[in-house]
Amino acid sequence: MSNTLNDVVEIVNEQAHLGRWNPIIGETASRLINVFVETGILPTQESANSVILEAKQILASCNAPSEDGPPRTGLVCGRVQSGKTSSMTSISALARDNGFRVIIFIAGVTNILVDQNRERLQEALRKASTNHAWMMLLNPRPNRNLGEIQAVTQEWGSAIYTEEDRRTLLIFVMKNVSHLRNLAELFEQAHLAPFPAIIIDDEADQASLNTRPLEIAPSAVNAAISRLRALFERHTYLQYTATPQAPLLITRIDSLSADFVELVSPGYAYIGGESFFTPNNPHVIDIPPQDLFPDDSPPPSPPHSLINALQLFFLGVAAGRITGNSNHRSMLIHPSQRTITHSLYQSWVEALRTNWHRILISPYELDYHDLVERFRVAFDDLLATEP
View 1 (cartoon, one colour):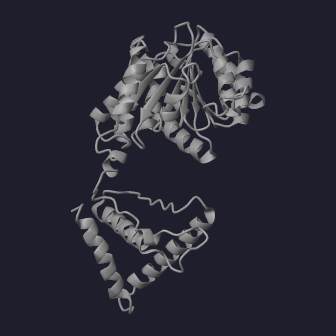
View 2: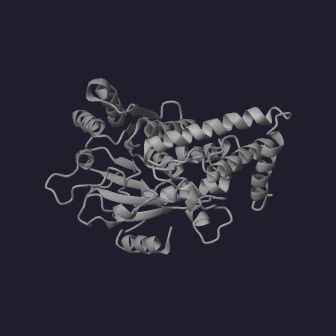
View 3: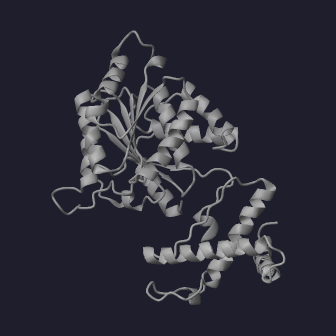
């Protein structure tokens, strides 16, 4: 994070009364530390401990589960791919350990994002918990899930159940007006108002904020989130994002304006924007102007920079296979906002890949040695920064 953002965090947090209470690191969070390391989500015990301790600090700034008072809003900032999902998983584990009954995870604006986040959280939390620690529901509806939720609320109020046996309700919901309204209607019918809740909004700068601040009626998703929040007497709303400018700049009287801000520290060997966007960076190759073209005037053949990038990528994949240091690599090609240009690049990539494969498995091909020498140029380029 930039120094400017750090300054803003300090200013907000001066008035936030941090450390309002002291969450315990209970059985679920303790097990989660081992899950992080055993599954390779985090590389070391030290890094896993650090994530849990940061999550504990975030939770300490939230309303305590037994605390009456107005709802709180937190902003949790992390760099791109810096471990926000691990932080959200840790918050969920700690919330269960400390008696929160409801955790709502607003997981994305598409099914792909929702499923991706849900699968990662579910897998880690189930491995860190006893068999019946959670009731996990995806996009629940009143006509389908009311009975299940009422059964859980009966557990919370029954002396027959021990605290360990009381399940935590973990809801995954798409950031979509219909799904959010269904959830609010379900919670109204289940009478969840008295129970302490944590609402986690992933990519909180996307769709959640009021995009109609000058109009009487707020934007639809923002209104649906406000309705959901109003159902709980005790809750904290945690906004997670790697691009916090909009949540920081909204008016302080907005319900989504943060009462406190926390930063997620990137883990060991993290590489992000600060590693790349520096002058004369040896890891970055600029696309030359002659390789750029309008969407309606494409060249007859693929640009040289695309060919070079593909060769570098395939060599990187091969190196990972040989050394055993990489199970999966992916390449993003984003030439335009127009789908027609994406289709053109896709056809180029597929043709290049098919042609190279045909040549390289046949050493007697006329073009074989020429292609190997072109790959050798890319190899020497990689060799300059990676031995």
